[in-house]
Structure formats: C-alpha cells, structure tokens
Image 1 (cartoon, rainbow, N blue to C red):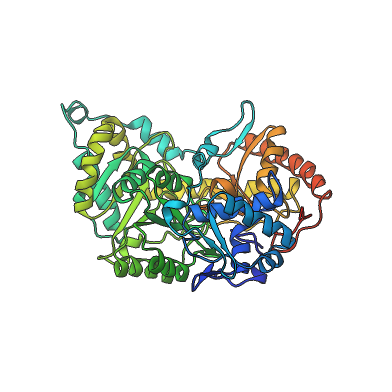
Image 2: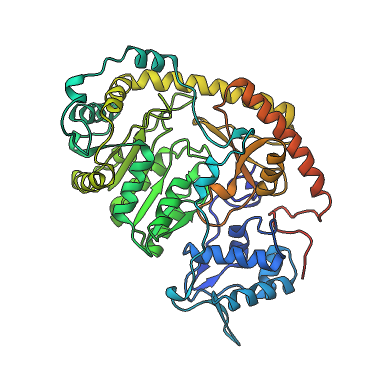
Length: 507
C-alpha cells in the first residue's frame, strides 16, 4: 500500500522527514519531496532543477537554505553526481541558487531574487476532458430520488423572490435554517455567522481574497483540492503542502509549519478528503482546533463531502472542537443533493462574515433567490439526503472495485470510507504519462499534478465513481487498455527503486 508521496508505508515512518534542519536541507527528505521527478520531458538534470525550483516557489525551500552536497543528493535520488552538478548549475544560471567555494549551494539570499514558478491553474485540468472522450476527471454525483421529489414539489415563495433587493449574506430564512442544521449537529451557530454563496468554491475564494496577500504563505494538505492552490496563486501567495499519513494530515508537521512559516491561513479538507479519501481521527481534529486557537491562524474547513459516509460516521466540524478557534466552515448542497444547484455557504465569526458580505456585494451582489429557496427545502432534509447519497455512492464504489479487478488487476486499492472518488497509487511509472496514453484511448483522467500543493509525486490518479454504470464500465475498460499499453513502455527503461527515484541516468 502506498500513500501520497509514493513511498511504501512499510519503508518509512508515517511522519515525513523534516526537509530543512538548522538551514541545511536533508538529501533524503528532498528526494522524498521531489517524488517521481525522473519522469517527464528534458534531461534528468533539467527535471531535477525544475523540481527544486517548484519547492522554492512554494516556500518549502527558503532564501539561505543550504542544498545537500552533490554526492549525497545523487545517492538519495539514485542518479549520478554529474546529474546533480548539472542541475545545480542550471539553478545557478537562473538565479535560484548561489554557489560559493567552501559554503556549498544555497537558495538565493533574498525572496525578491527568486522568480516564482509560472504554471496554469491546476484546477483547469479537471474541466478539460477531450471531445468524445469518457470523462473520469470530475466528481458529479448522482442525484438522490428524494432530492428529485423535493425539487419537483418545490413551490417558490414569490413574496421573497420578488423583493426589490436582497442581502448579500443570503436570505434570513436560509441563514437561520443553516444555523439550525449546525446547532443540531453539535456546532453552536447563529444566523449572523452564515454567509450564503454561489457554491463552496466561491466561499473559499472570498476567504482567500480577504485574508491572503502577495507573498503570504497558506498551509494545506500536500495533496489537496486545486481550487485552494489556484485561489492563493491568484492572490500572489504560495501554498506550502503539509505531509499526510494513512489517516490524512500529519498534525505534528502542521504544528511545525505553523511555527516556522507564520502562515496567513490554513486550508484543510479533513473529512473524506478530496482526492485521497482520508478521514482525520478525532484526536487529530481536536489538535487542529487547538493549534488554530494557539497560533491565531484562521483555518478553512472544507466539508462538502463530509456527510457522504459509507459507515455512517460523520465527524463534527472543527469549529465544534473549540469555540475560540478561528475556524471557517465551508459547505454546499452540490455534493449531497444536487450538483446543478450552485448554493453553498460558510460559517465564521460574525465580524469576518460582515467583512466578506461587503466583498460579496462588490463581486456579484447576492445569490440567486430562487436557488436559495430550493436550497432551503433541500437543507430541511439534509440528514435523509446525505444518507441516501451515501448509499448510492457506496454501491458505485463497489461497482468500480469490480471493474478494476477485471481490467486493472495489478492495481492495489485502498477504498475510502466516504466521498466520491478513489485515490489510486500506480504500481509503477508516471501518472502524467499514463494520462497522455489514456487520452489516446478516449478516456480523460487526472493525476497527482492536478492535486499536489507543490511538487507532484506523479504516482497517483483520482478515479471518480459518480458516472452512470455504462459510462464508468467503458471508462475503466479503456483505462485498462491504456495501462497495458503504457506498462509495455516501462520495460524499455531501467527498473525504478522502491522510492520511485531511480531510472537510467543521463550524467
């Protein structure tokens, strides 16, 4: 079984090694953070340089940090010393590092001298299925029969729908209903703590726009929803990926990052995490809330799939763990009721809600009133809808497991306890390369690069189990064909080491 960094769990501790200690970068930790950097375009030296550039751009490597000696990094990465020498020279030519006799290779001395890594939005890849290809990119859930019935029976209140103006924070009746839902689930909430939005992504973007500025650091899981990383990038901030283990976020690593990086914000998806499917244990949830209160750092808690639980366990919000922790809960009806209804909300301190209300007014004034009224009906039946949605998608996960056993028998699966997708470690090779091969077979998939907060380990793909039966069956059949074709090409390069770092060297 493997996890997000591609290293077998029985060959490493759950807590990832510290990348930088006393200003010196560990060769083993750097090799682990770079992941499967040997796959891609260009020479090995150029690929290694690009990987280090990405760590600089995200703030994991900071001005003054000393890179490992060439021989040590070559040994950790299973390449020749010549490859590392050439990569360091490339970095020096680009102004990323300074090389001085007797003091080694250091990240350039001032943040301003380090050029940020330029790349398109990661989330764009999830909306880029090829024409006539089967889309295994997006998680568009099946709609429960109860939701269909509620929508058909809905009677819009014209007295509200025809009001000459509406509150940018949302209809008072809807804010009260959402607050009621949280109170029933164990999170004390008032309507003044609720801001209704056009979906959860708008809620995330509003918070990021308000709290993050150029040069700020945001902490997130090392594998996360790209809507977070893209929003932070648009503000000129950088996302630092916090290591994950079998149960999700490594809370000890989070505490270290809070102390060292002084972030403006933390963004987490702790319940049936997208895309890994992990669920943060109770003790870790409580510790996150304690850290938020201790450091005074706001935490976005993305709960859009928290209620899609196959074992019936729906953890409470992080906000319920500690009342004085600055937790911002984000949710929507899209994943558990109706994907086409773009109604979401956030729960936060009333002062922040008022601030975001003003920003919301400038962005798009307010949320559609008819949409809010339908959402009112759906939220009134939230518990039943989540339960039915969980049953539907647990059955779809079982179908996916059956299909993969038939068409991808050499892939090992770790089924999630909730959510809408399966995060699968490739037995070998590159997720990006497999995606290119899959495209020629008429199926679109997303790999590690779309979800990595910084450097992609390039060793996992996400497979949603939300498509109709016939579409999912044909998509997995095509993916199986693509895998067999791609696997044949792997036999033409040298075998990789267990850490995924060693192939034929160009040094």
